[in-house]
Each structure stands twice: as C-alpha cells, then as structure tokens.
Image (cartoon, rainbow, N blue to C red; front, side, top):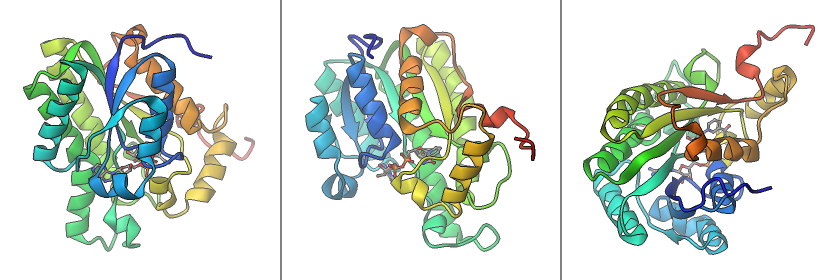
Length: 264
Ligand SMILES: NC(=O)c1ccc[n+]([C@@H]2O[C@H](COP(=O)([O-])OP(=O)(O)OC[C@H]3O[C@@H](n4cnc5c(N)ncnc54)[C@H](O)[C@@H]3O)[C@@H](O)[C@H]2O)c1
C-alpha cells in the first residue's frame, strides 16, 4: 500500500545492482511513494548488472560513478542537479565491498592494500559523497541521507572481517557530518543497520547462511527483509522523521536488543 509519503521529492540512489540489492527495493519503494530518482553505480556494474531494467521500470536515469572517485562524485552530483533542475531531497548510500572477504583473507591475515580498498569503498566513499553534496549545496532544506550498516560495527562477530571496521567508520562519519549538515541546511544523516540479507555483497560473507538462520531464531519479529528495510528507509526520507539525525537505527526485528538465550 502506498501513502504518497515522498510526493514531490527527488533523490539519488546508489548501489542497486540486481533485484536482490537492498538499494533496488528502496528504489522501487520510494518511487511507489511518489519520488523521482536518479540511479548510480560503477560503470562495470551498469554494464554487467541489471540497473538499466530498474531505470526503465522507475522512469529514472542512470549516471555512472565510482564512489571512491571524488571527480566521479562531483560529476554525479552536477548531473543529478541538472536533471532535477536544482538541489534535491534525499540520498541513499548502499555501497560496500571487501577485497579481503572476496579473496578469503581472514582478520588475522589481512592484505593491507585490500584493507584500504575496503575502507575506501565502504566508508570513505560516504564522506566523499557527503562532502561533495555539502560543497555544492546540492541538498534542499530538511533533506535526508541514509547509509546502510550492519551490527558487526557495534559487536565483535566472526566472519564479517574488515567490513566491521568499515561500518564503524561509516557510523562515525554519520555523526560527524550529521552535525555539520544539520547546522548548514537542517539535513539529517542516519545509518540503518539491517538484518543479514541474501544479496550479492551479502553472499561474500563467510557463514552468511548460518547467520541468517541464527538471527531469524533470536529476532523477536524475525529478520527484516530487504523490503522491510526499504519501507523503513522511505520513512527516513519522508517529512515524518524531520528531527531524527546522527543515529544508527536498527531494521532487524529486534535482534540487537536481545541477549541470545537457549530458551529462545
Ligand atoms: N546484505 C546484507 O546482509 C547487508 C546487511 C547490512 C548492511 N548491508 C549493506 O547494504 C549495502 C548494499 O549492499 P547489498 O547487500 O544490497 O549488496 P549489493 O551487492 O546488491 O550492493 C552493493 C553495491 O555496492 C556497489 N559498489 C561496490 N563498489 C562500488 C564503488 N567503488 N562505487 C560505487 N558502487 C560500488 C556494487 O556495485 C553494488 O551495487 C552495503 O553497504 C552493505 O554493506 C548489507
């Protein structure tokens, strides 16, 4: 059911690769709620992924950008403003990748070039995107920015590897840029910490299937699906959540508040 929550709003969505992507579900949901969007991903993902289909379905355009390149991000923000005829209302950061995870390098045997790439792609890209938006004054008053995080930023857990460090940095950037942007334009910045979800990025994580079963068991409401996450993020882009900023918010069926116990 749609509520027209985002009627008249315009936003930029990163990270939609295929139908499993959390960003894909968010793109569909915000459009169903009346928003207009611009999609972006790396040139290679656009070529080999399915984002073109999503663009067609949602009546949006796709602008290629590597989120680690400030030059690409400047071009992305300029072109997005050109497309919308000025500043826009919301941005989703749904970018993550760890070469150490991909290559099976464990946390006690990290390759440091890979580690830097993990941090650059999954965390610093968020700062680069925010700084570009800020300098170009690309967001409207009371705009909203959301990045996707994971509970391994807050608690030690095996398997998530250097992505845990990247997510911790992501959450810190959210607080520190949130302070600046709230004062400049009343723009709010939050992370949504999502349940483990079967996606291309998710499938690279060691023990992912077991983790999905474990959190399903111990989440009072069960795991949040990508669609659940999309509905939650949509409220954060809406005017209903204007005073929520600099927070890490859980979309996890209550898992983060439960101490796993044999009786559960
Ligand atoms: N799947 C999960 O269990 C889960 C849980 C919590 C948070 N998240 C986070 O959600 C976000 C989206 O991931 P997903 O699970 O939907 O997987 P996904 O693989 O569908 O999305 C990851 C996206 O990152 C993009 N990307 C990678 N490198 C990039 C770069 N240099 N520049 C621009 N884009 C780049 C990929 O092309 C892809 O579209 C990530 O930040 C991920 O860490 C995922």
